[in-house]
Amino acid sequence: MKEPLTIKEVSSVAKVLKILAHPTRIKIVEYLENEEKNVTSIQDMIGIDQSGISQHLKKMYVNGILRKRRDGVKIYYRVNNQMIKGVLQCIRNCRHHEKYGYTLDQ
Image (cartoon, rainbow, N blue to C red; front, side, top):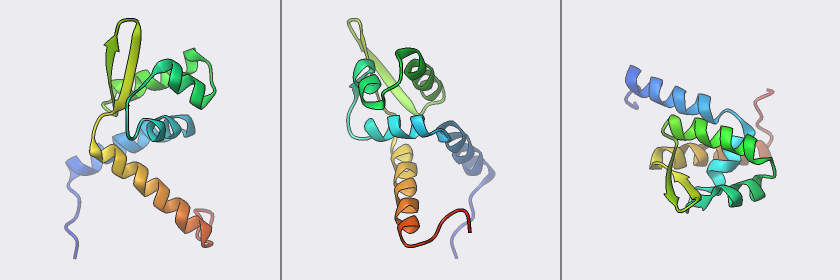
């Protein structure tokens, strides 16, 4: 039997899931999964205006999902830790289940 999650672990995971519960944020995290990118690159890939991207990036940065560094006038973001990459992998696994007829609608 697997060891049950502690209250602290459940709270931490719930916070991350709440922040990531937006399609744009999931796409940003996926884009930043393996390397840092500057805001312009993120904006070009996601396809929304800088104001919208900045709001999403700030929310994820303030909540510890992303980290950032400044290089002159450019700001670069990257995924902050392995747990976030694990959550992204779980999302991908759900996509694979959907291919075989298992959906959240059932």
